Image (cartoon, rainbow, N blue to C red; front, side, top):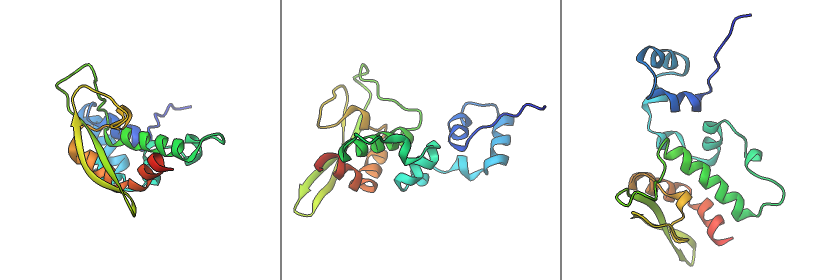
Length: 155
């Protein structure tokens, strides 16, 4: 029986930058060149896109005993992980910027205000698991997934 290597699309995207060119060509033929040329923020528009990119289902993140805000936090952690790709905040590096979306509460609910950065702190105001490598990524997630943030923060 021949041996086959099976790689799902999210894994292929993660591997792509760190494999030889001949293997990149195979990945491009398998999944299409556009899979590797699009920015991640062009691929993750909804929470369903995030589940698909990670290769999981909604049910994989939740259990019966979780409250709505806990489910929302888990979804946002997944989205943050995907949008940041391989980047992880290093809180021992006081020169590394860590961006996070900031919100205000208005009469209509939660409103995205801006993204801010911190260098060396974690606090309940910024949430270390929900920080981003760039302002662009932080702004994108804060604006695109505001309803999930609202569930996490206000419900």
